[in-house]
Length: 249
Image (cartoon, rainbow, N blue to C red; front, side, top):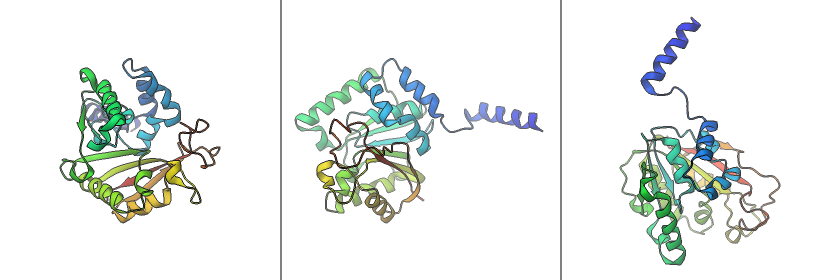
């Protein structure tokens, strides 16, 4: 019986290409060994553990995913490796974020990252959340990394409602939204510290119709007391962070 099961698994592997989710160790090795990947990105991996975050979110080969407010595209490139040649990655940035002096630097960094079609499965999406231009129920997963605080700290529900409504529309039923954010303490000025509230994020997500599938301690750091700005040299790159796996039912 055991040999029969093994044989069936082998046949299924040949037909589907895989019977298991993406292996984090293999993805981590691929990211580390990529000759064309920037050294600065590789240096960030120790603090961000991108392969293990991708595994936690269940992102796999062949998926259609979106990197939200991608900036220069650190996670875009990670996702490009994760979904492989048969997958698609949308690199989304609001057009306003690519204007002015800082925006011009970001746009230049994007050009460098995508030069010579080196990430052939990536499509730029320079559009606002109100007009993503994607079909409803067409995206398997999305990642928002270290940007949710801009919405939860805004003092208005309008931005986060627009964002979550747009994501809910384009995600497939069962689709995943992964949120990574610097953790905060409620008594601090978290707008100044650029930190986000896990409680507020979950409340907004549930109000938009998402369910919380799981939380992860992958990026927790108990040595960060959450009182310093995230760019402070003593915590930069090693803040205490929460990771949420949210799902559209």
